[in-house]
Image: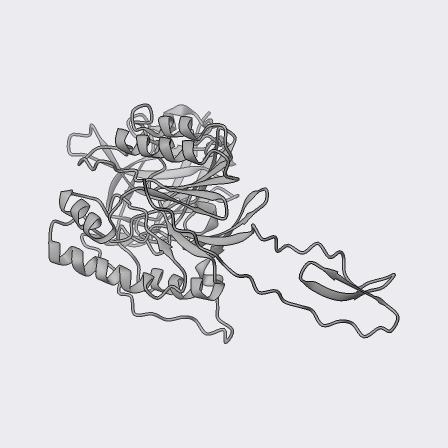
Length: 424
């Protein structure tokens, strides 16, 4: 049996200065002492500081081509906020290498950032962290377990490995050994007030859902209140499954086009307040956290070099249906293979209220490389159902697939205007 480490935390009470009104009643209210009169300049004295309340932070993906001075800056910003602890959803290093020296340097860099936190940091592995047998061995050498649990103030935290065991070119999976482990953990902790699950891949939206182990995990979680946090996609999205909230986070420095809230593309941390009735979430964007002197925190974190990017050229356009502007549609440009039988998505955009759009390939609204493209236009309302399934398409189905869409466009050097008039 695993030894349990009991942590005791002493709370300091802040005592308010008494108001100087003679003859008023002085009544202690919890940690507060205050003069209470017939009329008082406050709403009530039910303070939001229950002993069971605590705060923690969830950080998201840093890899896939991490950007300069983002994750390291987030560390300094988290120290300003002072949560009880921080937990990740994986993809902490670039990985995907069999060079032991390079792996050592990447982990050394990452751990130099987490070492600066003034509170605990709980590791959760992603596919970039466990991309081959060598990386699995390195993880074991540095951190031991790939999956584990802990309890804090009667809340159970499950750190799940969504690539267990690692297999090249396969989807996410949870091994039987891991499922057996969490079955025991959940059976031994039936009466906790809440369960938090952190894993890397949002397994519930993958095509191998029937076999990847997530449905079995949900069966183990059934009958208790829980919340799930994942990453991997680098786009924020909320799901509701089995009446519980699931969150797919954006990035904390990972590769992203950074097109903003409407695209779910931004750098953030999730501030979680665990109260009597479950967690309350606040997505805090990193560009909104400043120290008291309002000076931007600057770190020396270098970006991961990105290779093989083709030059891009601005592409702006408009989508109409029978002459009327189409708002909220996803426009995607696909590059066909040499034989024309397969297509690779290169650039995309959402249309504005007037049907206009600006394409993005690598960064926000940068355009697309030169070439001939098949074009699709889809208008889903909602874009995703709460379960994660795509919403119903409100446009003719012929435009939804690059194999059937009659829309095409050639991007050339310079500015490009792409006008697409759809017919019912």
